[in-house]
Image (cartoon, rainbow, N blue to C red; front, side, top):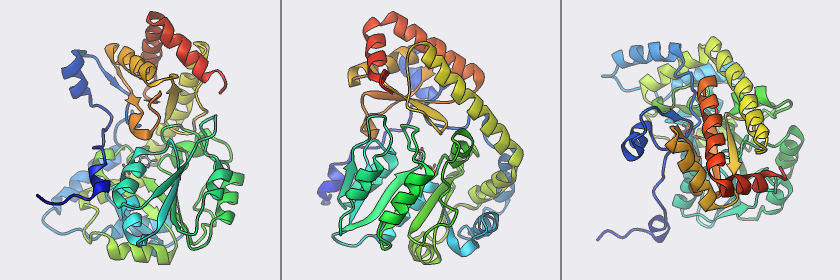
Amino acid sequence: MVKIPSHIQALSPYKPGRSAADIRAEFGVEDLVKLASNENPLGPSPEALKHLVDGARGMHLYPDGGAALRRLLGDAFGVGMERVICASGSEAVLLLALRTFLAAGDTLLASEGTFVGWQVLASASGHRCTYVPLRKDYSFDVDAIIAAVEPTTRIIYLPNPNNPTGTWFSQEEYEKIVSSVPADVLLILDEAYFEYAEAAAAGFPNSLVDQPANVLTLRTFSKIYGIAAARIGYGIGSREVIEAMLKVKLPFEPAMMSQNAGIAALRDTNFLGESVRLNTRELGAVTEGLARLSVKVPKSAANFVMIDCGSRDMAQALWHGLVRRGVITRPLDGFGLPHAVRVSIGLESENARFLAAFEASLAEDEALARSIREATASL
Ligand SMILES: Cc1ncc(COP(=O)(O)O)c(C=O)c1O
């Protein structure tokens, strides 16, 4: 039998947010709302959809390795294409960074309760990752993260805002991190929800402004641009960082169709504006709706909120209560927060449906209502 390394054997397969078809089959609920994967409830950018077809016309030709989109992004951010890399989703850029910059004995650093994709890639790399506990309010403990840097630390991963907590670190904290981390350590700022955060949180830091040479900023077309299935994301860093990663990247990634969709989505500023406005308004509505039921959530700058249920059993009870009422949310075992559930922000009608299902689930289960209110009281 082929020998499988112990760190790969120890991995659990990634469990994505459950699809509507899957839930329909298991629970027999017909009319479903999916608020499980932080997708854009408005659907794809219409421009992206149109240009996907143009990309398909040249499907017999090998793609250009993302050159056209790199050029456009390089211009848009005023950094030049040499500082941009595109791949099949920002998670692919993350994987590329791990493959490019790690050598034997190097270690990784991140916070607990962070993006499951990082946790999977870090474990699969075989390099030790130190996870620093979250603060009580679920924000990153910036001082503790800085204190946890070791001589072996080679990569630090910090999503801002964080998924699944929705919390973020301020400009001041960002500057503190940047000035404290040694210049030879790669600091990955995963800004998958940047466009939402910029609108939702005043003073939200933009790591592309005066970006230090050891920072790699990740962004994606999967969230606000609404083309998650196209698998297209990008990284922006110093020339040296991007040049090294380009040597490791699969030469024909990303797919041409995906790249064309990304180019069109980037130009579709109407759709971007509409998506931002919807989320900012509905994030407020959901947060207030929960507060009316005496349930608090960590203040979110993204397109989702996290509900602490007090225990894993209670989180399961909430998830089931919601799904029986046709609302699919995301349990957070894989993220290391088994006592919590994440709810994506949908359309106004979908969010109203969630709030009604949430209220009904709490009314039906007194222990659940008590547990959630107690767990979130101090937020
Ligand atoms: C923080 C964060 N980074 C990256 C991703 C993955 O994005 P992509 O679809 O571009 O791989 C997600 C998706 O949920 C995310 O939450």
